[in-house]
Image (cartoon, rainbow, N blue to C red; front, side, top):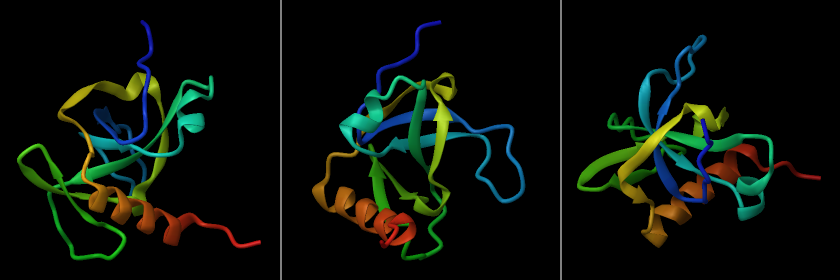
Length: 116
């Protein structure tokens, strides 16, 4: 099985089962995040942010559009997944809206930025 090449902002259908505790579960769209370098590291992992249609109005879950469907990027659920979990590209292919990209980047920065 050949593993997919990934690039930042691509949207993939990802199988997140099995899950533990409060982790997001199931098959769902997920956005590849990180730099070009992060996507090219030969560890067969992709860093993704799972998506949902449930908008809880949380500041770290920005609203996005997946094709014609409204959605939410669950930046608090960022995770590295084996590329074998990436099942196929989502119909919307990637997040292209600059405001949506900025909102995701801002939420990720707030959640995972480490101060020195």
